[in-house]
Length: 198
Image 1: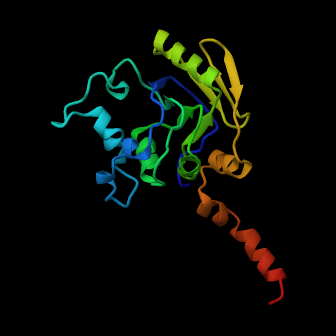
Image 2 (image 1 turned 180 degrees about the vertical axis):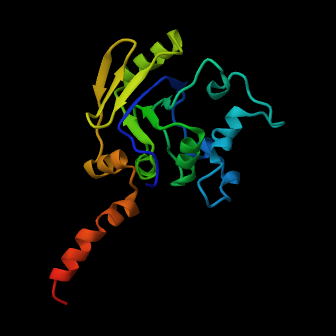
Image 3 (image 1 turned 180 degrees about the horizontal axis):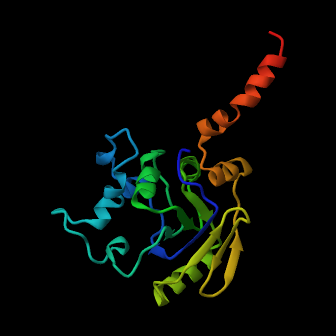
């Protein structure tokens, strides 16, 4: 498996009520030298999380002990900018398994689906309701049900459906990337090849 299987995630959430978060803010370019996926979480939102002397900025949500969980809830237009996969690697390595926003940049969304982060696009109204619930109670939990393609605010019982490509959905449920998917079909491919004249 390329990454953890994703079926149903029940978790509290970390709010990031900022719009137009681009990939250079998610992981600054100076941290892109590594070629393995490990260690990028240390520098997730580096310039927003830390001062120039490497001390944490107390007012940034990821540094606030009130907030925790495997769901990141962000403002509209999350993941714009460059196509770097490292942005998603950083989010995954930090411990998030789902990002919720009212709009995602297309390349970022596809990178998420390839790397094991579920991008859940919701209506602006549902997003604001999530922020409101988290602000009122930082322990508010949300249930993200991938098989049913539904997200539920367990504090208010509000729910909303979300879209996902069927192929990517199946891969996420199985913990597959594109290569894993093909390797899973090796026996079928061999049978087909044996029956097909050259």
